[in-house]
Image (cartoon, rainbow, N blue to C red; front, side, top):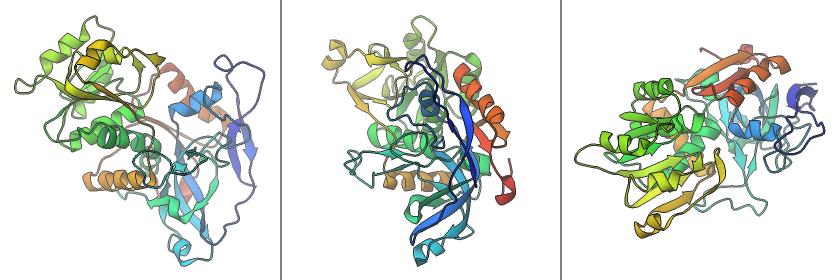
Length: 361
């Protein structure tokens, strides 16, 4: 029987509990007509996986493999020509179901069903294999290793929608502020915006992370721990464009009060998360300047294809912070420790069965 890693239930209240990992067995996949069996070679963590272990994520479930990001080799298919054409190809998985192409949100009345660790979807990528529909994969970019290819589906999709769809400012010459640089989504926003010719500025609590962001193409950055950081960042903006066109934010907190001092009239704050606070003040000053706050979460199947094609075209390589090898509790725990400590710069990846794929990292 194939192995996987899930969470084990113990007593505790949401927010204070931290569910332990456990290795489980899962049924051997039997593909139907239009389905694929993928032998996974790498999977990557996202912040939602940490929230699941803390019971701070909707639909947290036990006995379901964790993680939504994965790459692997198609080793078996159903009988349809559509499925068979994927046999022996290296693929990445669309990290969620129920959202085809609507710009507003998921069309499925059940909502968006993300892979890994919840009741809404019974499968996850922290496993030796996975069963999925042939319509839910893309060929893995040839320029990426297995670890790199596993790194971008969920975070890349979230970044793509937040920047390219919701901000409306992924345009050459525009000034984009990316807050909290270092996490997977923020780094993809940086890389996508730079590839589109934007002037990108960042915030972080770490000078080292700001430095590394500038090596990736950021024009400048400031520490959000510094009082009056918004004034320092304003001084970095080009003389011919002394404003920020859009902020892409994953923290929440005081982003409106600080950001409205930097944004142009009618500027946009595109928010994909609230890691600092689940509440955020919307001030009258922002109203008077026509500032818009737009929520953004993951993205549609169409947006996933658009993102993958752009990544292939521009040969963008995800930033990988750490790779561990082996589908073992002790091994995977090291990655969760990095995430809890916020020590990572980039994605956290576990390689599962490199002999089945073509890892080159």
